[in-house]
Length: 182
Image 1 (cartoon, one colour):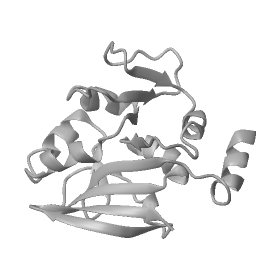
Image 2 (cartoon, helix red, strand yellow):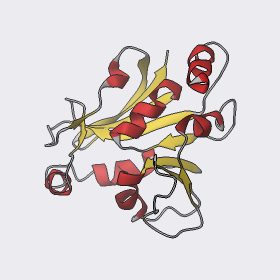
Image 3 (tube, one colour):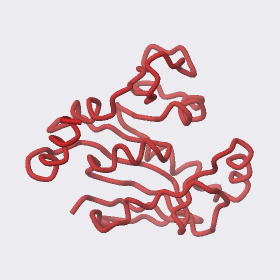
């Protein structure tokens, strides 16, 4: 509790977190589906260019991902990235036995590792993990599709006015929005 209060008070005034959220969404802020079948159905309507866009958003030496999202994220291979897999369960089994994976049970402690640092932590999901790191995020990159994509997981908390668009890049079927904290 103390750490949460300390970070909340000092985040805006003295600390500079090198944390960036990176995700895909449609215009309604839908970022996924709560079931495997629901996520599989999404792939048929995603713009083909999105498959080229997303890996660029995930670039960086350090990545944080929730345990539920880790399997699909890690199956694409991430050479040279240190991946922190977040779970509340200290005994959780990681989806793969790789030397560059680390189980993390304390999101605040992980965030503090990236205060006033040259290295950036890229947070890639899911919704609960985005929500945990949103107060510390300095940047957000959103690959936003032009078409509505089926799903029932919506992440819109970032749109509360704390972030403004810095730049935007169009691609076939959408755009990538680069936002920065005000």
